[in-house]
Image (cartoon, rainbow, N blue to C red):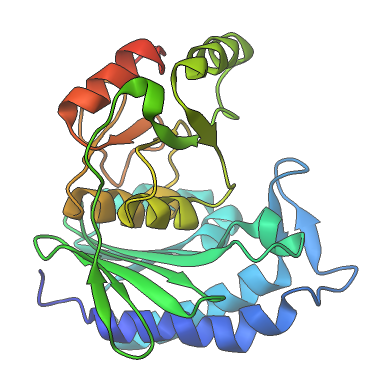
Length: 276
């Protein structure tokens, strides 16, 4: 745990953004409120931008010395992402993770925040506006599901099981076509795989013991810093495809989460056979 992080205050900021800017727009977006970014499945809405503005203002008041890195801020100024490496303190935010779901009227989206101290992720929050609860973690303090009534439940990675019985997340959309074909063929080895197009809920499912693995290729910090720390605090083995630690400056190299190193290696060698 780090004394510079008031995780309860940060959690409340995410809730306020949801109440004020996100939920009033859910299933209520106008014709000009949804825009395409890089491709038809990469969207931004008025809710994303308004929520990030609210979060940024509140975080800057709470942590004036922290660099603020938001997904929409980086979309406007890509150079901002490079400042993460050298920042003494930074707050990274995804105002709506699962924007495609949100824009489609599917209640499967979340608000994500992580705190970076001297190049290391030290805290993470994943807030579910629909369920009105938080998954919280601080380095060295475990991962916890916190409900609005004040009750808490420790998160955990369920014990490993045979590959043929594993259920997990596999996001194959950012591989080249040949790697994608190979991985999709290899995934016949597991019992079931899916993608909810929302890392926020995928990490929460893992941390509540409902799944056995998760694999991602594209690594943007707002999508994976909070969740990767959360899974480590829940007891999982988390590493990039080459076995190295996932750090805030990494945007490539893949990410694989499993119950332990043996399950991680089994998945890496038999299913996710991609170049490191």
